[in-house]
Length: 260
Image (cartoon, rainbow, N blue to C red):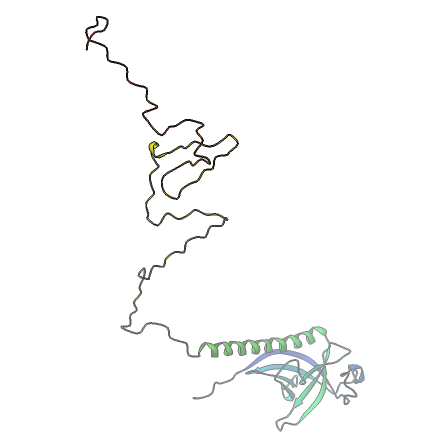
């Protein structure tokens, strides 16, 4: 497949620019424009900044003929290809290269601060665009990775069992208090309350002797006295003694009563 054709675009053009021959850097503190011969530039022409692909080119050309004097390829910014000076914002140091790969450092300056600002912004915008292009390609590469296919194949079915699970016995809640309700008796039936004839009252002893009530575990309610020999309340064992004798039947010959 043929490679993509890269077109050259123009980023910025400045008609007046001065070029200076600069001395070698004395220390790591950077270049200073005060060390140059600013009154007598070595060359004067125009600057044209172009871009081809991701690389920017700073071209110094003749104002009239357009003949190329020198160019500086820039692959990153800021970088060693374009450096600022420490004492002015209108002057820069460029690393120019020829077709054979030889390089040299020259100084360039603008007469107006607005021109130097446009020069700076043109390079920043280009490499901002390059960064965005790299991010888009990296995201597209991640999207093109094979994805896991979780869809159903043709004719594939699944079965769902809803509401057919085993019922679990719910645990009985534990009482939070200290005493709870007692369970029913093992027989499962509750005995009826005793009748009045089942209650047996036995006489107790002296007044100083207290009554002791004993509750039998059976269904009869019995009051047991402490001393059965004492007869303080009388003998109620015989129901006949408590019923008065019947009245004598009157002779029907008596005239005082009418026989029914």
